Length: 274
Image (cartoon, rainbow, N blue to C red; front, side, top):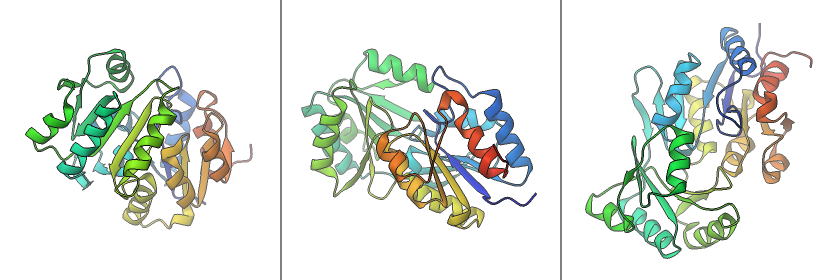
């Protein structure tokens, strides 16, 4: 079977992962059929590597997985890092100090460790969803980053959904010329090194697999997915996605609870008529 699109890159939360958690059997089967037909299926997520890797292995995927919006790209089988872009310590400290001044719940990601400044409902929610345990630093996480000379892949603020837009704007106004500021959830404002976004990750994967960008599909649901949606040969938004992403997409698929990824694979990846 000749595949029109040789590479499908998918976000995880709100895209492949169902609202209540897990990956549906239809999605699992569709991914398996696509890979068996010679296609490459890869994750690109804002999650930390240790949080997405179990799902990649559960699906039996080989090759690469992209985490931290693509700041980290690793081989699934060996764990070897092919890309590991980090913020300079000084910049990370400035971001943390600014978020502290806004009274935020803050995460600092250093490899497989996530440091958190508060033991609260945000911490417990994040740990439950992502399957990781945070290391508490105390409120002054900026000083902790300084003292330990941490160069993180990402810094994040967790907020009540009604607070996130204002926090996002404050952070963007302060740091947009120095860092990549985005969001993957109503609860999150995320800061990476400048240029570390999912569009760059898609280009990396395209080059690695020697599959032209116009033969790639990217699927996502939120603001952090826009760069890869815009660069893919076929950019796909989930029906449950944010409106700005839908407007940027070439196609809007079904929701994450209606197996929207499987629908894309069957319709475009495997060339079926649905």
